[in-house]
Image (tube, rainbow, N blue to C red; front, side):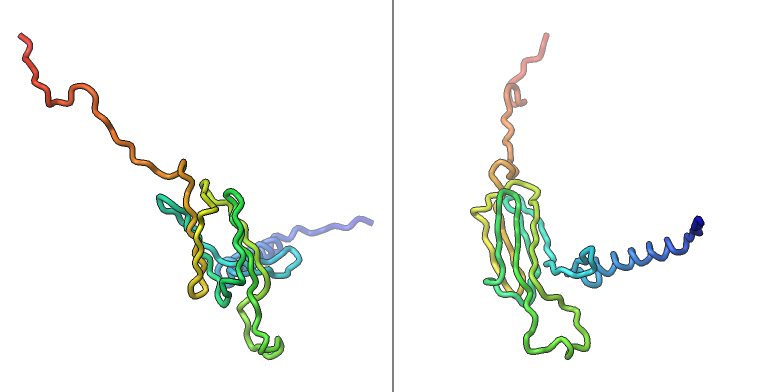
Amino acid sequence: MANITRFDPVGDMVSLRSAMDRLFEDSFVSPMTWRTISGGETVTAPIDIHETDNEIIVTAALPGMKADDVEITMTGQSLTLRGEFKADDQVKREQYLYRERRFGTFSRTLQLPVRVQGDQARATFTDGVLTLSIPKAEEVKPRQIRIEANGNDGDAEHTPAS
């Protein structure tokens, strides 16, 4: 006997709605967690990147971490940050009434948009904020080009044609 399946557009809309809700939550409500396919959560650190004329600046929010707990690696234009957010051992899991902070290891690899001099990078860590200043390679830095005027620039005497 053949089974007949009825088309249910409302069911598809509900799953779309649930996917949009999850996207909104992952992006704005708890941006430091990424859900894996199996439904588990991994931890990541929010990062901002901007550039000046001479360098790329990377800022990472790492609340509760110490500078010694963070590992920074550069290979070419690839930057990797690794570390671990550690849980408070004084409070047991069943004692929590509400818990939003996520704990665990993270690893974040970024491709920088321009060539950099990774061996000259400087890192500072203040109040849970890691700031990396990575100088751009000389060939990608903007240069001012001076214009030299050739020939008649208007200062020479002109004799009227007769």
